[in-house]
Image (cartoon, rainbow, N blue to C red; front, top):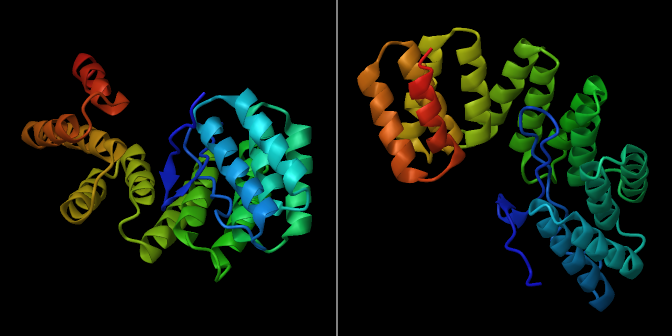
Length: 262
């Protein structure tokens, strides 16, 4: 079987688990080994392959690659973090927890490992612990994507119906990176769910006027415009969604909106 094409977040292959109703963004494991040599290079390569296969749902092949990575570099925090995400996907919480603990023992201050562990904690209902770990990752000066950690914290808090705390974390993410579409979507969706149509619409207009909008954000824009009674605005966003993301789940969801406009 040929190697899969990897999904990316901020330029590196990543896994984005979706056990919560809202997406949590898992950090990438390091694409470069901490101590380069042929063995560690091979382990890092197998980790990236394992993550790519996880993204495609090929869990058996992913496990094969990550087992090989473990044999090549048993003291790599990256390997254990990736294996933890695999066991998480497989529904084996005890093994996932054990692998995360090993990764944290090997690299207790690695912000990517800490972020991934926080995803696991939130997806298993340990909200306060998860948020604390997200904040630890975000505050680490070596972390390349603190905006993702803050967004994750907000998603975790939303799942626990702690919306005002979530709102603050989405705002922190956007202060760091105003173009971060996932944070913009989450904050705008939160405003929409609370009936705050005017600020939600203003946020959408500001974002899509300056940055690349995602399919999720454009579909939300349609819903907000319809809720405001702005048929022309809704049609404008719908056309952009269909043009920019033809065949996407969000574009197909427009038909459902037409059948159920309320």
